[in-house]
Image (tube, rainbow, N blue to C red; front, side):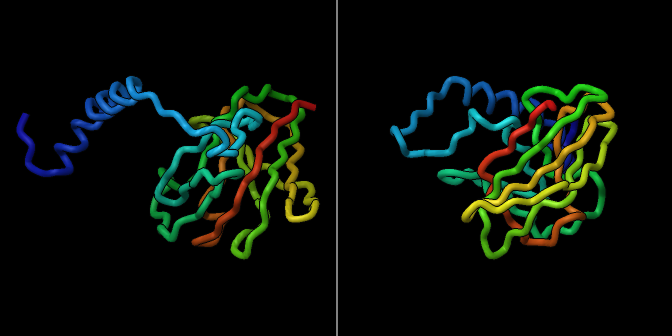
Length: 174
Protein backbone atom coordinates (compact mmCIF):
# COMPACT_ATOMS: atom_id res chain seq x y z
CA UNK A 1 0.00 0.00 0.00
CA UNK A 2 1.41 3.38 -0.95
CA UNK A 3 1.16 6.33 1.43
CA UNK A 4 0.93 9.76 -0.16
CA UNK A 5 0.57 11.94 2.93
CA UNK A 6 1.38 12.05 6.62
CA UNK A 7 -2.34 11.89 7.47
CA UNK A 8 -2.85 8.70 5.49
CA UNK A 9 0.19 7.08 7.06
CA UNK A 10 -0.76 8.10 10.61
CA UNK A 11 -4.41 7.06 10.25
CA UNK A 12 -3.56 3.66 8.77
CA UNK A 13 -1.01 2.91 11.50
CA UNK A 14 -2.91 4.19 14.53
CA UNK A 15 -4.03 0.75 15.79
CA UNK A 16 -0.62 -0.86 15.52
CA UNK A 17 1.08 2.08 17.26
CA UNK A 18 -1.51 2.02 20.04
CA UNK A 19 -0.93 -1.72 20.45
CA UNK A 20 2.83 -1.25 20.86
CA UNK A 21 2.34 1.64 23.27
CA UNK A 22 -0.04 -0.42 25.42
CA UNK A 23 2.34 -3.37 25.33
CA UNK A 24 5.18 -1.12 26.49
CA UNK A 25 3.11 0.42 29.31
CA UNK A 26 1.96 -2.96 30.59
CA UNK A 27 5.61 -3.86 31.23
CA UNK A 28 6.37 -0.61 33.09
CA UNK A 29 5.88 -0.40 36.85
CA UNK A 30 5.08 3.08 38.11
CA UNK A 31 5.54 3.73 41.81
CA UNK A 32 4.61 6.78 43.80
CA UNK A 33 6.16 7.91 47.02
CA UNK A 34 3.83 7.46 49.97
CA UNK A 35 1.52 10.46 50.44
CA UNK A 36 2.82 12.12 47.27
CA UNK A 37 -0.61 11.93 45.65
CA UNK A 38 -3.63 12.45 47.89
CA UNK A 39 -6.17 12.02 45.14
CA UNK A 40 -8.65 9.39 46.37
CA UNK A 41 -9.89 7.70 43.23
CA UNK A 42 -11.20 4.51 44.86
CA UNK A 43 -14.31 6.20 46.30
CA UNK A 44 -15.48 7.70 43.00
CA UNK A 45 -18.42 6.08 41.17
CA UNK A 46 -16.84 6.80 37.78
CA UNK A 47 -13.56 6.20 35.98
CA UNK A 48 -11.28 8.90 34.60
CA UNK A 49 -12.87 10.63 31.61
CA UNK A 50 -11.69 10.57 28.01
CA UNK A 51 -10.07 13.79 26.87
CA UNK A 52 -11.24 15.52 23.70
CA UNK A 53 -10.54 18.73 21.83
CA UNK A 54 -13.22 20.51 23.84
CA UNK A 55 -12.31 19.28 27.35
CA UNK A 56 -9.22 18.18 29.16
CA UNK A 57 -8.51 17.24 32.75
CA UNK A 58 -5.63 17.26 35.22
CA UNK A 59 -5.26 15.20 38.36
CA UNK A 60 -4.47 17.49 41.28
CA UNK A 61 -3.50 16.41 44.79
CA UNK A 62 -7.09 16.17 45.99
CA UNK A 63 -9.33 16.71 42.97
CA UNK A 64 -9.80 16.41 39.24
CA UNK A 65 -9.60 19.73 37.36
CA UNK A 66 -11.88 19.75 34.30
CA UNK A 67 -11.34 22.53 31.75
CA UNK A 68 -13.45 23.49 28.75
CA UNK A 69 -10.93 24.42 26.07
CA UNK A 70 -11.26 27.34 23.65
CA UNK A 71 -11.73 24.92 20.74
CA UNK A 72 -14.77 25.65 18.54
CA UNK A 73 -17.12 22.73 18.11
CA UNK A 74 -17.64 22.02 14.41
CA UNK A 75 -19.12 18.55 14.64
CA UNK A 76 -20.59 16.29 17.30
CA UNK A 77 -17.71 13.82 17.43
CA UNK A 78 -15.59 15.50 20.10
CA UNK A 79 -18.02 17.78 21.86
CA UNK A 80 -18.28 16.07 25.23
CA UNK A 81 -16.41 14.87 28.27
CA UNK A 82 -17.60 11.41 29.29
CA UNK A 83 -17.08 9.57 32.53
CA UNK A 84 -17.54 5.81 32.28
CA UNK A 85 -19.48 4.70 35.33
CA UNK A 86 -18.25 1.73 37.34
CA UNK A 87 -21.70 0.07 37.36
CA UNK A 88 -24.20 0.69 34.54
CA UNK A 89 -27.50 2.36 35.36
CA UNK A 90 -30.53 0.08 35.61
CA UNK A 91 -33.42 0.95 33.34
CA UNK A 92 -36.43 2.53 35.12
CA UNK A 93 -34.52 2.91 38.39
CA UNK A 94 -34.17 6.06 40.48
CA UNK A 95 -30.69 7.50 41.09
CA UNK A 96 -28.96 10.41 42.75
CA UNK A 97 -25.67 11.77 41.40
CA UNK A 98 -23.71 14.17 43.57
CA UNK A 99 -20.74 16.24 42.47
CA UNK A 100 -18.48 17.53 45.23
CA UNK A 101 -16.75 20.64 43.88
CA UNK A 102 -14.07 23.10 44.94
CA UNK A 103 -14.99 26.68 44.10
CA UNK A 104 -12.52 28.92 42.29
CA UNK A 105 -12.77 32.23 40.40
CA UNK A 106 -13.46 30.67 36.98
CA UNK A 107 -15.79 27.87 37.96
CA UNK A 108 -19.52 27.77 38.23
CA UNK A 109 -21.86 25.00 39.18
CA UNK A 110 -22.47 22.17 36.80
CA UNK A 111 -25.79 22.62 35.04
CA UNK A 112 -26.86 20.10 32.43
CA UNK A 113 -25.69 16.53 32.67
CA UNK A 114 -26.34 13.72 30.22
CA UNK A 115 -26.60 9.98 30.63
CA UNK A 116 -25.22 8.29 27.51
CA UNK A 117 -24.72 5.07 25.64
CA UNK A 118 -23.12 4.86 22.21
CA UNK A 119 -26.36 5.89 20.48
CA UNK A 120 -28.73 7.36 23.07
CA UNK A 121 -28.68 10.12 25.67
CA UNK A 122 -30.93 11.40 28.45
CA UNK A 123 -30.70 14.97 29.75
CA UNK A 124 -30.95 15.39 33.50
CA UNK A 125 -31.11 18.76 35.21
CA UNK A 126 -29.57 19.70 38.52
CA UNK A 127 -32.00 19.57 41.45
CA UNK A 128 -30.09 21.20 44.26
CA UNK A 129 -26.89 23.01 45.23
CA UNK A 130 -25.43 23.13 48.74
CA UNK A 131 -22.41 24.92 50.15
CA UNK A 132 -20.36 23.61 53.06
CA UNK A 133 -17.43 25.96 53.72
CA UNK A 134 -15.36 26.08 50.50
CA UNK A 135 -16.98 22.95 49.07
CA UNK A 136 -20.09 22.90 46.91
CA UNK A 137 -22.37 19.99 46.13
CA UNK A 138 -24.45 19.73 42.96
CA UNK A 139 -27.19 17.06 43.09
CA UNK A 140 -29.10 15.35 40.29
CA UNK A 141 -32.05 13.03 41.05
CA UNK A 142 -33.66 11.18 38.15
CA UNK A 143 -35.10 7.95 36.78
CA UNK A 144 -32.87 6.31 34.19
CA UNK A 145 -34.79 5.41 31.02
CA UNK A 146 -32.06 3.03 29.77
CA UNK A 147 -28.98 1.08 30.89
CA UNK A 148 -26.58 3.99 30.44
CA UNK A 149 -22.83 3.52 30.82
CA UNK A 150 -21.59 7.14 30.77
CA UNK A 151 -22.33 10.51 32.30
CA UNK A 152 -21.29 13.36 30.03
CA UNK A 153 -20.81 17.11 29.90
CA UNK A 154 -21.43 18.63 26.45
CA UNK A 155 -19.19 21.50 25.37
CA UNK A 156 -22.09 23.62 24.08
CA UNK A 157 -23.32 23.99 27.67
CA UNK A 158 -20.10 25.57 28.95
CA UNK A 159 -18.28 28.78 28.11
CA UNK A 160 -14.76 28.50 26.76
CA UNK A 161 -12.00 28.31 29.37
CA UNK A 162 -14.51 27.31 32.08
CA UNK A 163 -12.95 25.13 34.73
CA UNK A 164 -14.00 23.30 37.85
CA UNK A 165 -12.22 21.16 40.43
CA UNK A 166 -14.20 17.99 41.15
CA UNK A 167 -13.43 16.38 44.49
CA UNK A 168 -15.76 13.43 43.97
CA UNK A 169 -18.62 12.06 41.86
CA UNK A 170 -20.94 9.72 43.73
CA UNK A 171 -23.85 7.75 42.19
CA UNK A 172 -26.48 6.21 44.47
CA UNK A 173 -29.34 3.87 43.59
CA UNK A 174 -32.38 5.12 45.53
